[in-house]
Image (tube, rainbow, N blue to C red; front, top):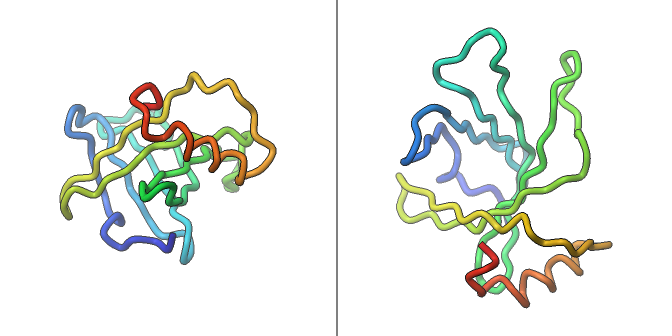
Length: 127
């Protein structure tokens, strides 16, 4: 999906105000998300993610990949992704439903992963 301008800006969790999440457009289809602690000490570093949104069975899924700072260059740590079903409930609230970490299957392509999400994405154990 193309970047949704309604998602851009600074967000914070409704249940915890310890962190802010700044969402910027990296390009036409990708986001950069930076998680920062509000009351930070010298040891607290921001966490940066590369992200994009995919549609599966009519649902939007946020795909995140964490990157780390090496010198002044942000680089990929490993190809570990985090997935959230997202719903923009209004211009002020974004609901995220984390996909379970208990998926043990391995996927060799994005098509295989999409098929898995299509099959199980509507079941409650998936979140």
